[in-house]
Length: 158
Length: 265
Image (cartoon, rainbow over all chains, first blue to last red):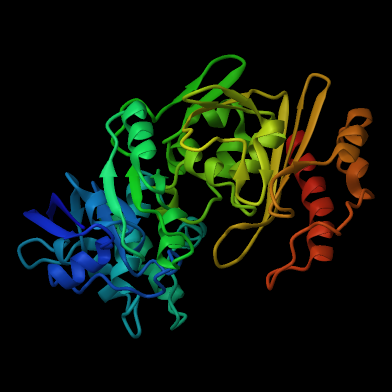
């Protein structure tokens, strides 16, 4: 069986016609060729596949593509504007918040969610560490990731 | 995943009629348990019926005595609700401890309760606070709802529409989470409303259950010390790579103690 749907991804409209069981992450990577969104654990734990659905971070390995019907999807590729990095991406680069980089797209997407949830507040390290619990980095690079999120929150809250 | 046919339901009636017409139907709410189950090929529904588009299935209403949460309300919304935080802070805390932020942005209370995973948080709150489960057909009391492992009083095709919690005088929730999945190894919700005391345990057994011995002890003295020496038998408790049944039995006492301490803090 196949199912039709349409959504916006990184500002572009797409119309999908795929098997009902196609996962959103599979659709994003294999059908749209947007391979910045990664599949780490495939069990909703590691957070590498995090994308924004209507501005809210969700794990695209645990959603069907058709569940995004009518939504506005943003992936890591959609963050930069006019060649300029999103403040979160810039902060990750500035703070050397990655080693191998595999978890980075998911980290950036959920870190933006943390700043959004605490809009206007001064984020502290404890909150960031706690709310990054849905993202796993196996290079143990959390220290610089936390620094990057704190730095980006200053810029994003300006 | 095995193949299935996906469809959206436009109303509760539409959902039940699609369910009736399906060879083996399965409702999907947030999908946070259903999709991993399908991915592991542990279930093979012919039809997955998505409830996400059904109108008026999400929202929280707090009156003086009750907190009503519609079935499709996300965990993140329950956690962030100032009304829930004010009326039953332990429930807001429970919702904020499920999975991780991304899971809480999709998972729903109705889905969690209908699925009745032995390690899920919400069943502990239903039993520990004495909630009422509203469905498209009837109302079911907390003590009659959870029957066994993944088994509830819901009939084939019955849909949870709302969960109503009585606002307790005080309540506390403590869980010992699995460090990877954040599912409960043991979670305990303790509450007092007038002379009614409830101790609801999740994670430890086949499904959420009460501990009458602890409730009786708390009725005479609502203090952590009252439950400190009460051990529950480990014979029927869960045992897996994460924790033995003996360890879970021990954790029930420890979590109950801490939950009481939180309730009276």
